[in-house]
Image (cartoon, rainbow, N blue to C red; front, side, top):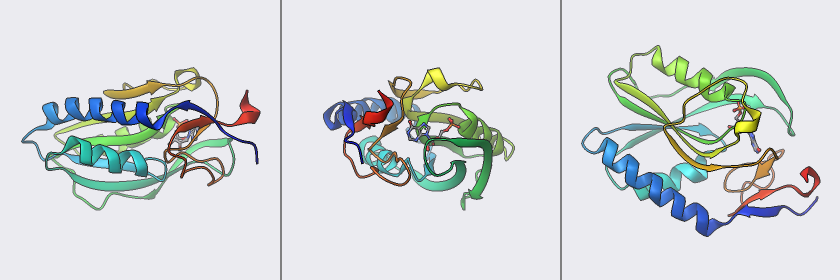
Length: 174
Ligand code: IMP
């Protein structure tokens, strides 16, 4: 397996997560927001973010099938695991690792909006605008990344590399 090359260090990620948390804390103070993470990729970001936000929040997760094994995707989004928490009249913040084509978050935002939350916003740590197929506003965004397949900090290639603390590009993508 090729050696991944670091493009965003763990220190840069930690600093950015802290900055995003300051904004989220300010916007959601007293609102008991429900943070909904999209598994599996967002699990590392979610755990760092909730602790950095450091105000009372609730969390839940969904599983959406998007990318299959490897780097290619069917283009179809399917809900594999729904939220358990009722979201009507709740302030919902969707937490995603990376927005590429935008299909995954577009699907989820539409799906959640249908259930009449008080508000629904999106926080994504990484944004790959070059891949965009559908427009989706990102309310809280961390880093813009180049048009390459990235791994680490929860993101995988074929279930590998999620454990890497830094964001990396796979060698073969250069
Ligand atoms: P979208 O529907 O193309 O925006 O897909 C977003 C989902 O695809 C994310 O939740 C990731 O799981 C996955 N994904 C997109 N780009 C990458 C990447 O560069 N590395 C790892 N996973 C990615």
